[in-house]
Amino acid sequence: MSKILVIDDEKAIRNTLKEVLEYENHEVDLAEDGPSGIELFSGNAYDIVLCDIKMAKMDGIEVLEKILEISPDTPVIMISGHGTIDTAVESIKKGAYDYLEKPLDLNRLLITLRNATDKSRLVTQAKVLKNKVSRMYEIVGKSPAIMQVKEMIDRVAPTEARVLITGASGTGKELVAHQIHEKSSRAKGPFVEVNCAAIPSELIESELFGHEKGSFTSAIRQRIGKFEQANGGTLFLDEIGDMSLSAQSKVLRALQENKITRVGSDKDIHVNVRVIAATNKNLLKEIENNTFREDLYHRLSVILIHVPTLNERLEDIPLLADHFNTLICNEYGMSKKVITNDAIEELQKIQWRGNVREFRNVLERLIILCKDRITGKDVIAYAHPISGLKL
Image (cartoon, rainbow, N blue to C red; front, side):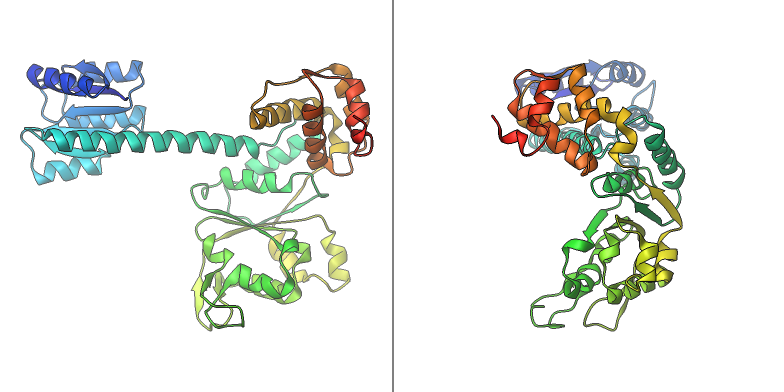
């Protein structure tokens, strides 16, 4: 069932549409002209709008523009008894979902409404999923160390500058990369992640640049590489310190010339990609050891962002505990646990070798093993892997 607003200056049309739509189990509100329709739309949430084009007080196209200013995702179906192809084209260009001519064909109207309802639901689901993803990649904390990182993200994100993110394992370097992407002009483009440490050196070039069919024994079909997949968006090269020297030279060329070549091909492919890299290694030492190219380092490190360890921002633990408490309990479909003050104090005493990643795992263990409250005694009993076995 959808909530539908009908805007039409013909009373007979309004009443007929109301009768038909309510018979189909929709909830219907009526407006006799453009201004009253906009007033109703402003004060209520509608899934779909049916709007006449030729009306006395305000033209339907103007109503369409006002409605889409208020809610750009609401499907607006334009209807008219004096329509021409030009009118239909103009309404679609202005953002209308569809255009129907009077007298209305009932079957086409119902099909259009069904499709518009499906679109509205998909848009809503997409927003919910995006909010979930955004919360998943939220950087939680108000300590001076993490606020400095957030401020740097806000300054760097709107630019096209390449960024090198450093920090120990588990500090949340990938969160920084996601935030830069989401706050950039490329946010609507793809965010493609490559874990350079997880891909064998002999396969990394194929992973990044793709390959042609038959270029090597197991290349049974053409493959599009990550650089091409990220075209128009952001490519995140995680653990770049583990990339082979051969792949490094090709990445350097891609950054210099904005073009790549698939393995087994001699054809250049132009790409428009913003590269963000991350590492838990000291790349300057890797350069001294001849395992990382100095010229690539300088290309990647236009902006350097260092993510602090959890031990360097223990004052963020109460916020992190509440954040993960909400996320984890939602995942398990359980009520949020109460975390007592003495539990927070005990969590702040721990030396977090695995940083925020370890902290999340520990909190998940506490949520699973404890009842409604997590206390200091629970933290002492379950916060470490060995003691966690003593049930």
